[in-house]
Length: 250
Image 1 (cartoon, rainbow, N blue to C red):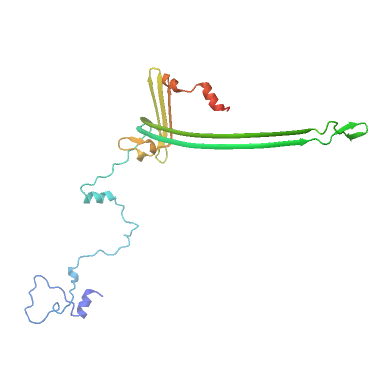
Image 2 (spheres, rainbow, N blue to C red; image 1 turned 180 degrees about the vertical axis):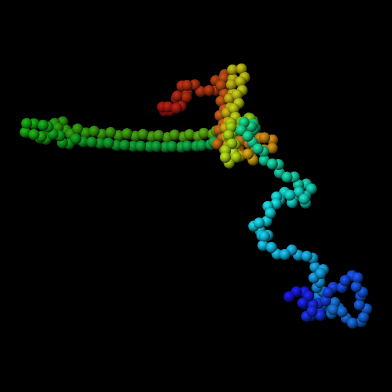
């Protein structure tokens, strides 16, 4: 039922007076004085769009939320776009690895063995066949007894740390965007030589705006650091000590 039909059937529902209309100066009470509800005439109602099935939550336009934030906030700063990496690009790696190992062991072994044997019957071969051959000096006997004890205690505590910066090269880019990094550094001072190699895989988003990636963000991380020279010779074990520790004769 439309609004116009409701007005014809019930005189209580009257259109709102226009601003240019003259007020009613008569003494008769109006519909508004009797507590009637005013209804806006159709000609004053705003136009409405016809219903459509084309608009639904599934086909809403994909609008970037940053566009709306930029329009309502003066301090909004959009996130910087991800950097595009290529093979042979240089990336800095900050290595900060700390490892600590503590182990204790205690082993104890005790063994007792007793063996006893008596040869009570013996045989000999004759022309008539096999006949018993008793021992003139008594039955031979064998007896043995052994006892062994073993106990070992061991404890080890190791602390190692690597803290250095090294530049790496991107040698490969995986299909999912992960970067394969390799780094090598060699430093020589007189007769001393320090050589460091590093390899690992990281994500592109793990590299910060300052072009630095942390070693904790690398997977398959391999670090090898070697030094040669008279400084290394001062604390290196000799070949006999290495052989003795490897064989462990006692």
